[in-house]
Length: 154
Length: 192
Image: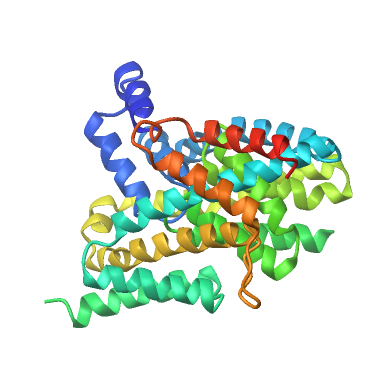
């Protein structure tokens, strides 16, 4: 996504500099929610304040909403056919494999030091074994991070 | 139905506000909704993830639209379409609000010790969110059960082969949708 953003925003439209795009993109990952929406809101806000942010984000979601709605409506009718059911049974296995790869990549990236390894393991245990709600985990992690930074890090 | 719509709005706003780690982390929030309200089955959710991953556009947005459609289309297609729009807008509204606030005090946010401390723990926690979302999908797809210990052997072999193929250096760069297609073809050939 990043090369596409730079080409459009920097080279074609001259709306922001390359540094700004990179900066927004990294900030978009340090704010909650879908990264594409966060980046779009940053760029939109820079050009047109609050309305700019809203319009840029609506721009990002419009096409996916249309595409997904069409796919969902078509699939709903096709799911009655055994052929499509077999197809999706296979696709689901591929999804499981794909998610496994993503997990390895993400976890490897997240495990920077002892404390982050600990957080990954404890969080996973809370989520997968104790079935803790995601909301509680996010709040717990935020509080832990702040407390740790305040009292244990020099 | 009004109650379902209000719950969808509430749940998706919560997801938009708290799903650190992007769209993949949001999948775990969808699983929470599934467990709490029984709106969709694990199989349907895996189908939603499959479509969300193989369609252009952000995964989180795609999944939100699909989930909204699936839940409300029980009342008719018109409601389904509305459902997809409602969930997607609910997901992005709190995010836009957060970013506008952050953008106003950009330097303050960037250099805030509180924010940096929180995110140094939130990043690994987000990886765990994605990991547990993936584990649930693997668990339900391969029909793993602990007591008595069992697994769907056919599914597991296909899973292991696909996983190996995806990890190969030469094939790693291929578009994920291609692997989903291969999975689909295997599914048809073996009548899974």
